[in-house]
Length: 156
Image (tube, rainbow, N blue to C red; front, side, top):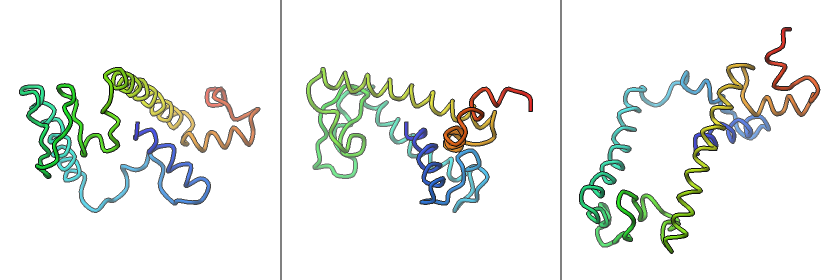
């Protein structure tokens, strides 16, 4: 879901002049503080840590209810395989009645699916028009009769 926000928000803020960031589709061409292999390995380490804790909880339920950095901070008992506490639920939304938790999990799944469709839509817009979704929106608002989805498929 943050991936969709990472496409739309920076592109919008760049369009209105608050930021000066490249478009999301050219982000891989930029030079970062280190090479991409190092970034990938660091990402694997962090994701591996999170998934390792989840897997440990599945194998031995309740074993991850002690915070690894602050041992005095006892984590709330959540369902097996669903982490909680300061690192995975900083706002405390995962606590409460089982009905509320089930409703929030269902909303998360639905919002995640909607975000995947939004990212796919932004990807298709870039492929067919060569610009991002915010540029296409502003072009459509400036000329609604000609800047439409069908304009990308009509011969010029």
